[in-house]
Image 1: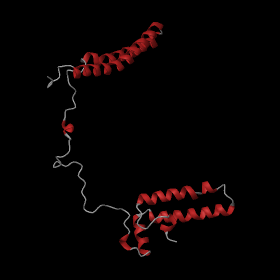
Image 2: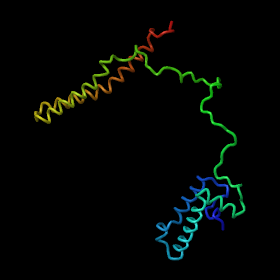
Image 3: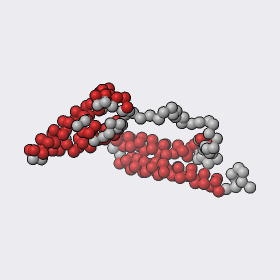
Image 4: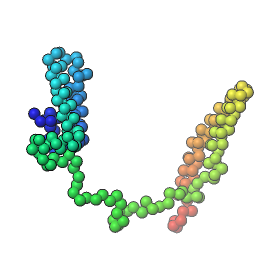
Length: 185
């Protein structure tokens, strides 16, 4: 019985196919899984695992596999790394004018007319820092009013972190539906 027959694959199997076959067989015949079997079945399972390991030892190494294939008379015919002949991969071809890919070259900068004022964008950050500062002051002084203030300011910070993007989206939506857009009659 050849190593290929032991693994249950053809001689031209690829490395991923060999690995998958080995994992499947190892899960079936591994000694930890066959420990609960009766004596003859356990010994048979151990013997199978030894044969699988020996086949994997030879077939998983390219040099040992080539030598093994020669002993079987397969010669160089076994190619376990399949590559297309003379194919060069080109991820982007400038000559390809049929594609509608103008979007790739558009600016990623938002319309300044729809962006909220910088001061509004800083409010959530300022409130978070203020909440942290008041909380630190409470830890030092142990005044309960400071704890309440830190929690309230922290909650306002969270609300403003949510409200700021909503404000930006509503401003953009208003601009989109208004007559201020260029090219609109």
